[in-house]
Amino acid sequence: MNKYRELVELKGLLREKKINYVTLARYLKLSLSALSNKINGKSVFNLVEVIKIAKLVDIERKDIPLYFF
Image 1 (spheres, rainbow, N blue to C red):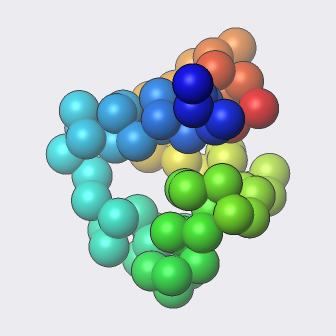
Image 2 (cartoon, rainbow, N blue to C red; image 1 turned 60 degrees about the vertical axis):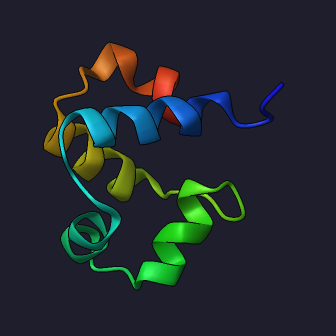
């Protein structure tokens, strides 16, 4: 069982929307390694990043916990 089910869901959504990690890192103004750490659960997304990602991939406010918390 995956410890970070939400992040697996987020990765799937990014693939579905055809958004690669390089594009997402640039959008969030993060290095690729910082994004990798966050998307793999080694560090956490801050609230501003969560909101930006939600807007980018059309996650409704009520569904944000399914992908981040």
